[in-house]
Image 1 (cartoon, rainbow, N blue to C red):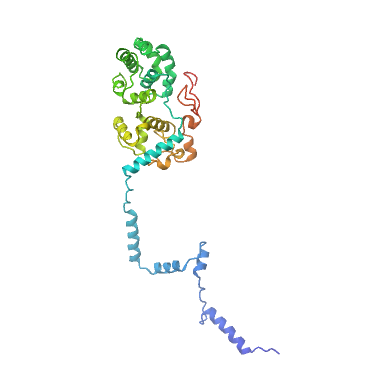
Image 2: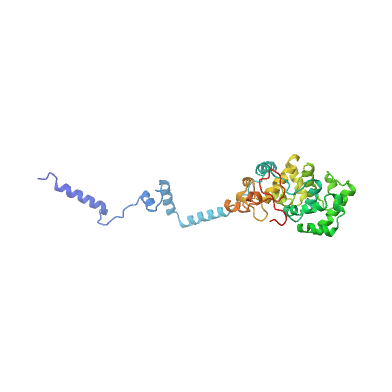
Length: 338
C-alpha cells in the first residue's frame, strides 16, 4: 500500500503546469538572460552595465537619439589640433642624433670621386656637374694621362679635350672651364691649387660647392658640400626649408660644430644616394626612420624597400674605380667593362 497522498500529488502537478502557462492556460515565452543572449550572438556574455545601457538606449526617444548622433558627427568632423611645433633646440638635438646614427651606418663614408692630388679632385668635381661620379671616374684616367698638370691642361687643344670628356655631358662648356681654371692656376698660383675658399671661387667653373669639396678632402679644411642630395635630405629632415644652397650651407653650419662639416656632408650624400632617393625613398629599410619627420614619403614595406637600395647597400659596386681600403662594396668597372 502506497504511503503517498493522492491529493498532494495532484496539487504539485497543477502547480507545475500553472507555472509553465502563467496560470492562464497560455504559454508564456521563455525569458532569455543577458548571458544567454551574449552566447547566442557568439560573443562574450553581456555585463550588467551593458545590459542597462542597452535598456536605456531602447527607451531613448527618437529625437534624443538623433541629437546624440548629430553631436557625435560634429565631434568627428571637428578639425584636429596641429601637432606641437618642434623647437629649434629639439631640432638641433635630432639633427645631431641623425649625424651620429649615419656615422655608424657609413663609417667608411668618403668622397666618391677618384683623385690623387688637389688638382685631380678639382677637375673631377667640375666634371661631376650634371652627371654621376661613376661616369667621371670612368673618364678621368684618360684625361689625366693626357694632361697630368695644370700647365699641360692649359695648353690642350679644345677639340681633343672635348672628345675625352664627352661621356660626362656638357663637354664644350666643361672644356672651357677646365682650360680657364688650368690657365689661372698656371698664371696666378704657380701651378698649384690654392687652399682658400676666396681664391678657389675665383677660378672659372668653380663655385662654393666645388670649393668646399676640394678644401675638405684635399686640404683638410672643414666645409659643407650642398649638392642635390644634401639639399633634398636636410629639407626632408626639417633642418631647414631653404632652397638656395648658400643659405642651406649657412643654416646647417649653425647646427653642427665645424669639425663635423666635411664628414657630415659625406654621410648625408651617401644616405641620399643609397637609401633616401629622390623619387622613391626606401623608408622601410632606413636606419634613421624613427628620426625622420618625412617617413612614409617612400616605400615603407621592408621587403620592397630593400630592393630599392643602391651601391654596396644593395650588393652592387660603388662609384669609385679605386675606393678606399675600408669600403665594403665592390670597385666600379672601368669604361666599357660594364
